[in-house]
Length: 87
Image (cartoon, rainbow, N blue to C red; front, top):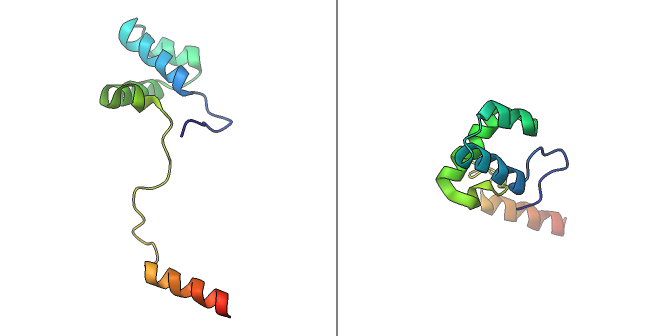
């Protein structure tokens, strides 16, 4: 998913620049955050994701939850769908 929403301040390219300036050029995090109009927390977040997953960590990720514990059981969903088609 490499299609950031219209109000996103960072893209994978900008995130790579952030990481480059922080890790290779050793610029202060506060200066980087100010340059890109983001918080220092966001700079640290992208540095951490880069350290964890490399370049792939800078890509946009899905915001879909990993699990839905209150999700309706599949058999109920199928029954409801069948009833909607027949009634």
